[in-house]
Image (tube, rainbow, N blue to C red; front, side, top):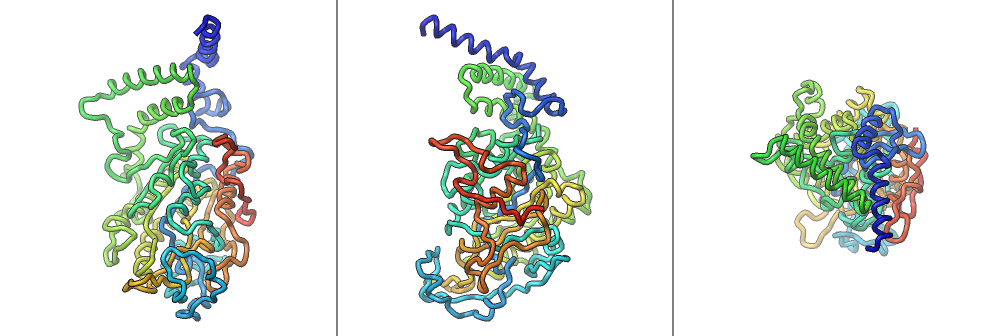
Length: 493
């Protein structure tokens, strides 16, 4: 390097090192932001520092309950008396021509009705299945979408589309986009937390990846018992002071490197080390439920067992307690400022034994999800907390007649053309049903909602214009909604 280049490089380093008056001023800036005495967009090395939205938000936090495997909307949310009348009859060939199925042999496939009983709930009269009696008591707070549509009919691409807006690897998930755009109010816990129960989604960690965004925006997988995050505790022989000294040395080295090359991943590394240190106290306190009242624990069903239930794809012993605990932890995470909490349960992939399998899963989910909505409402948190129940697609009105299966026509195949989801709180207009499907639930007849529309609406509730939240990647400005997406105005309060 010639003398001129050395001088320019040194000048740049000196400027970066002194313009914020060093690490002390950066720390002061962070503290002032936390106290609301300095704009969140001031210079800071913390990638998760709170940021200003495009316009006034209705929602501040999101709990996304993802039922991986695709629950049958026809047995939970979308009653079809005509389907029951046509039980055992084929669909017209005009409807199935050119349609790809995962397993159905369409030449001999026939319609299967639902054994579930649907009754109206709340002042709005929303019809829900008899296996969702508790969620039914929340009907007036829920906006039920019966006209969701996906472009994918296999699980992993479908899950990627629902969680990241495109059915391909390497793109940021919804929680990552929200934390990138808005930061988080939580200083001692990640801005994006993932809680799982059951078998685990087929998409695995790709459902909570940060993609091409810095790794600090990736979802952090928590456990609801034992060590909350693996390797969080100090190993034997390492004292708190030793760890603190090592962390200070790492921070100094990383800061020096960051000032030289301005790699955002280094800023993520600094923030992650410091967050992990704070989490050693905050995470164990989070999962310690001893401060919760017995009435609260009972409402969520913490401690429930699967006694009397036939277990299957939805999980084995301990699934009920695990899911109940996750719902309670979601509320506790919201109270601690975590921006996005993802509760994932699998599997709802009911290709056979639909009646017993859906009873097991619905009983697992019904009580704690309803308790979560009611608890948030009673604590004054529902107005600013968006609760979403979602999945990757729906199930066919046709019975699955997989060749050679002794359980032929006892389940339903993958169905992307029409399925159901619901939302509550966070600026959502409850007590309404959006969209309508045809008499057998095959196609949408009114108000179709694409996955990109759902994401555009979610961002809108957080004060974000989905067209403006972009990152330059691969030669173009990439966004969560890809090249589509419209805000569903009917969902907004």
